[in-house]
Image 1 (cartoon, rainbow, N blue to C red):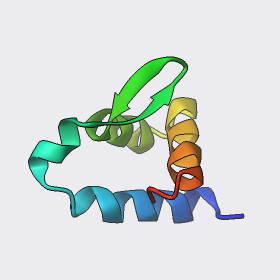
Image 2 (image 1 turned 135 degrees about the horizontal axis):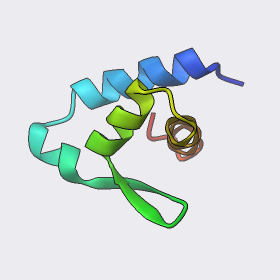
Image 3 (image 1 turned 180 degrees about the vertical axis):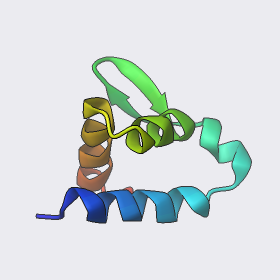
Length: 64
């Protein structure tokens, strides 16, 4: 199982290589709410529970 830090590092690596216009795209749905790359980054930066859920879903979906 990957650690939270490993998932964060993978997320930032993918995020930093995205074209700017892709960062507005929805990547995952959490609690019925669509989450864009930008919102995901804010949640992950703030180390929220939603950020952890986003990381877990992105890892499960093999996006990161």
